[in-house]
Amino acid sequence: MKPVVALIGRPNVGKSTLFNQLTRSRQALVADLAGLTRDRQYGDATFEEKSFIVIDTGGIGEVDEGDGTIDDYMSHQSHTAIHEADIIVFVVDSRAGITGADEVIAKQLHTLGKPVFLAANKMDGVHEAAIHEFYALGFGEPFSMAASHGRGVGNLLEAVTANM
Ligand code: GDP
Ligand code: MG
Image (cartoon, rainbow, N blue to C red; front, side, top):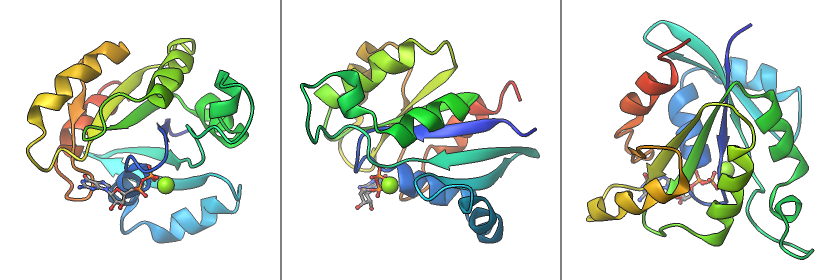
């Protein structure tokens, strides 16, 4: 079984952009695996001869209804992806800073006992200083990344695949 890496984070932080970077030129397999579910997108990724499955998720972090508990933020499909995963990549938007939804997701991820790598995305401008605040989420050093340019993705993957 290949290791499974789930991309988790609130909407619009760049999860799908990162997914496309990780799975590019592997569309056939993406299509095959997508048949497993309509809610989560699966893809095959390779980094330095290590292969793994990536899960993209949507619909996490927005409170549609309810009283703001963790379950209101975490859609069913995101819960499932988190539990299918061996490794989590928690994506945040370095331009937005830490939001309430990020904090709720972080709290949930801390309960899992799985490795979590924090990716501070959209670091393609004059935002270098902003990355330090993300230490406060408690996942160690954030990986600076610009998924839309592919910048920093190699560094992240080196860490993610280190123990595969
Ligand atoms: P998702 O909702 O988390 O899947 O986010 P998307 O991948 O759909 O991206 C949301 C928006 O952020 C899109 O307009 C992307 O083009 C943009 N985006 C993603 N990555 C980057 C990045 O590294 N830099 C910038 N400036 N924009 C990005
Ligand atoms: Mg998306």
